[in-house]
Image 1 (cartoon, rainbow, N blue to C red):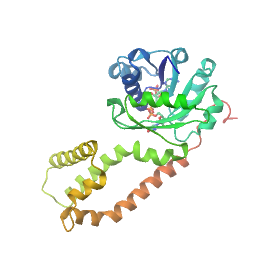
Image 2: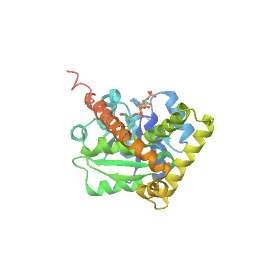
Image 3: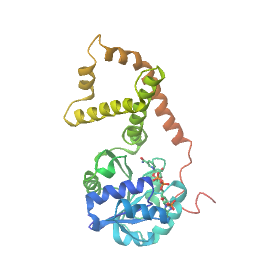
Image 4: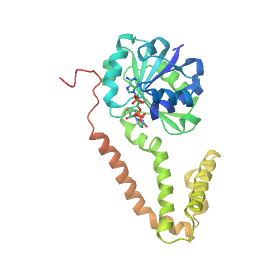
Length: 275
Ligand SMILES: NC(=O)c1ccc[n+]([C@@H]2O[C@H](COP(=O)([O-])OP(=O)(O)OC[C@H]3O[C@@H](n4cnc5c(N)ncnc54)[C@H](OP(=O)(O)O)[C@@H]3O)[C@@H](O)[C@H]2O)c1
């Protein structure tokens, strides 16, 4: 399988996260990156100094796995530049749930897959989701999973599961942080005499404890059961909030699905969609 490196295209939020992550797993000599603005290149130099910067068109000469971390609007132009250098051995990864893998697969000579990172990957934490494209072999899948294990907990899923899995694995950290914020706000709104900084520290410790307990083998059910004894205050809080929380999450996940469905499939051939 691929003996050369991994190439990251686009050094924005996702590109930098994945550059740091892949650098942990493949080693500095095999992590290549292509940026556009001076600012994004400077950020890479600061945050992942071991990555090797190369021009976009040079990336396929250095890397067998190419990760497209650019926005929809830039995808066609990037693929146009890369395509003359791409060959059958290149595996192209997209981060975009809205781009069907069969379309990407038709646009490049090699295999394709979808990769969904999550915050924390840059420090070796959090999930990654890998969705194989139509021609991704078992061997290539295992090769990708092995690299992802170097900086994340990877899950192999089907493309049809991408939206729901992304809600939980990738949006999840921000959603949980937002839940913590809403707990602090609720105490403040009902006039609790806690300074906001203290309230935040207390919730942060709860989040940290949950994470550690899970890490040490407790399940979510066990954590709930240990604290929420029948007739107690926590049980009363869960009882009071459960109905509204379920409704809120149904609405939240409907919103992600609607938002994704509202966006056109990104054009991946510079002239095809426009004409
Ligand atoms: N799966 C997920 O969890 C997840 C989450 C968020 C986003 N995404 C997807 O990931 C992709 C990237 O999102 P993002 O938030 O990282 O976007 P971003 O922060 O805007 O970064 C995109 C980067 O691509 C660079 N770029 C554009 N054209 C380029 C080219 N020709 N050569 C080199 N670099 C180029 C841009 O350069 P400049 O600095 O010059 O603008 C920018 O730094 C999007 O498709 C987005 O939908 C996925």
